[in-house]
Image (cartoon, rainbow, N blue to C red):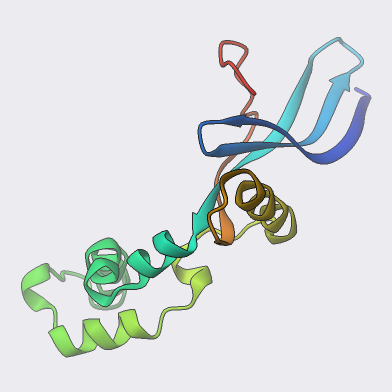
Length: 141
């Protein structure tokens, strides 16, 4: 089966604060066709600062921390957490550990576009979805 792809990698739509990037379209010789893209959410400076406040970060990352500990030790619950170890772990997280920075370059284009439209300072955009993400019932702007 032959497939034809046409690549774009362009911002094509916005729904609220979610930006849709068309990566490529495809069509198989049997007529099956579609579009593949990614969805980005701009992370403003205010949001970034709030996310990285240690107490907010601990609340957001508790389940990832528990998952890592369970993988290492087996049965591990919130009661087993050493607060100093957990705080230290959170303080050493990188942006890539907190946000999905897939397709970073196009995400930065989204951040700059959002900043120009809203006037809010943005740090970057997080990839919050992707694949066949275009819904014919959604009203895109």
